[in-house]
Image 1 (cartoon, rainbow, N blue to C red):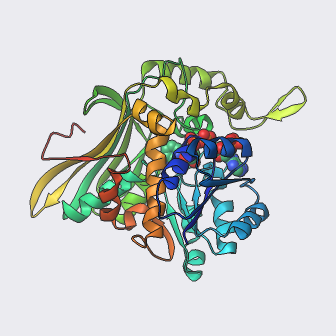
Image 2 (image 1 turned 90 degrees about the vertical axis):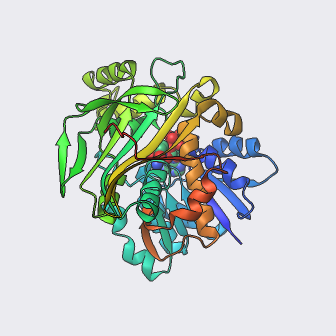
Image 3 (image 1 turned 135 degrees about the horizontal axis):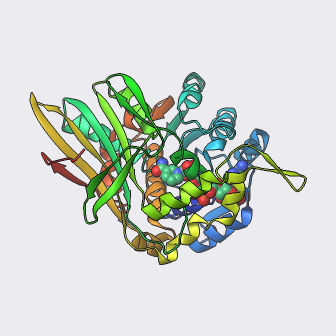
Length: 396
Ligand code: NDP
């Protein structure tokens, strides 16, 4: 019996629910979130009484434990917010449930991205014979699985890794974020950071950028950011000498972002307003478009991949592996845009890998530690086909 509990009913949760419901390896499905009506809407869109729903506050371990004891899932797919990772992991340990997520834990009061908090659960998951799979969206997620696949099949040593993430879609709004605005703005207003020769090099936020050409899209200005999978990838592939992450932003988006920062709306500390305490970035989230709502008029594609240099059989080699995903196609299938789609498809597929016994282990794992072959063999059928190019100019 492969019972799955999905927590979080946002854009990503919508895609996970659709994909899990279409996969017969999952026998019973429950979708739980803070606002039950959102779960009910998704369950109705999927249809066939395939999905049960529940209300849960995932910041509250006893509530999660009660839900897990009642439903008895085999695995939890956590697609709520990164703030809930640890409480959900605690409840999984208490109830003997396996765990999968798409983003590393972040404390609410500090925009800080590192795996230390979740890696600290290694012994507890191992002792209970449970598996926690970390970062199984697209990036982190497929980006790390692409790297593992390259290391397994195409390189003796990887020396340089550049993860390139382009969203060339147009949603017709002046400013909107493609996933949770609070999490998104916290991420991109941080200092940039990349790995070189055993050290982390910091750069001022969005100060390093270059033109990169993306397949079917063309040249786009791409900005160096820190992204969480860099931390685990340089640990698990120690031959890497340099690892960087690039993301495209349009000028209009960056201008809005600069204004948001300059007027204090990206602050994550509490301010007093009309006798109550509010966090400006959380208030901003309430007035920005809901990422889920962007899908309807979204056109264009995303293109995310890994550009890799290294050595095979004593010779230098370059390699590029990527997926392009079309916003309109993603919307037609699941009612969400490509950023939610490219995150939700790998999360659902990762859970299927676990349920089928193709990914197994006791402890806490980043996805690049697991066998990339069965996952990539199915990723295309699940809606995210991938393409490889060898010995080309990587531009980075
Ligand atoms: P949304 O904000 O659209 O959805 C988050 C959902 O979690 C909402 O339904 C929200 O409930 C629910 N939630 C928030 N807090 C709680 C809580 N305390 N208890 C129960 N439910 C809660 O976010 P997205 O769907 O865009 O993103 C989901 C996750 O995916 C995030 O962690 C994000 O970082 C990650 N992500 C990963 C990517 C990758 O490639 N690896 C890319 C994009 C996103 P409510 O509806 O009531 O607000």
